[in-house]
Length: 253
Image (cartoon, rainbow, N blue to C red; front, top):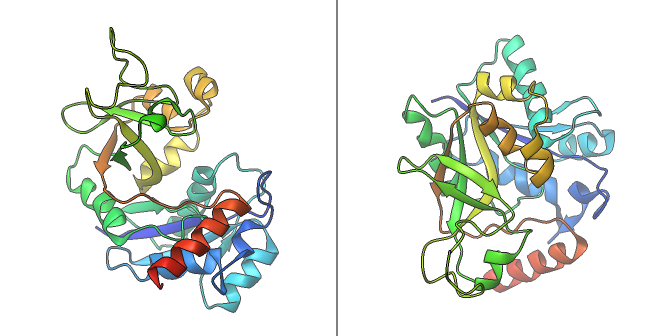
């Protein structure tokens, strides 16, 4: 299974402008993500997808690979799709494309390997990750996206609300009654599927929950959800960056 990891990285962010070039223990975040992903045995190539010359210059400085993309993309998925199309057009084709966000410097090899191995099942079109929720407050937290799966492990629905609903049970005490799964936003696609889903129009469910994966489900695509025990440390704000610095110090990384 020939696999490419594409790392969308943009400058503009309402919560943390210029985030890819912020320093994390002496290296920019985008460098840490690229180095981590490009060292994985399950990935043949890694490419940073950006629309900003400052980010491109940084990738060139540390010896990484990048592609300049359009500035009008609505999401990292769309940015990845542009790179996937251009790679295929140039004769550099891959069976699977993994979208590793440019603010995920701690993504684990085992997580990406689990995504890639999901495509050994010919029915899998898209794969993503989830972990068991262990804190009751996360069940009700709208920033913690929940996912429910069918018996094959495919996503039935994603929501910011608590799923499943525990009828007749007191809210705030739902966690012990059944498993709740937190979605982790790392995706892999069959490369031709990535291009197709990027061309879909937004749907009402997607707009309601602000979750692009609902657009794919509404259009009939299956999303296999692999389980992981790791809790990724994504960097969305300067406060997240400070926590990541602390984590590195604590683990002597």
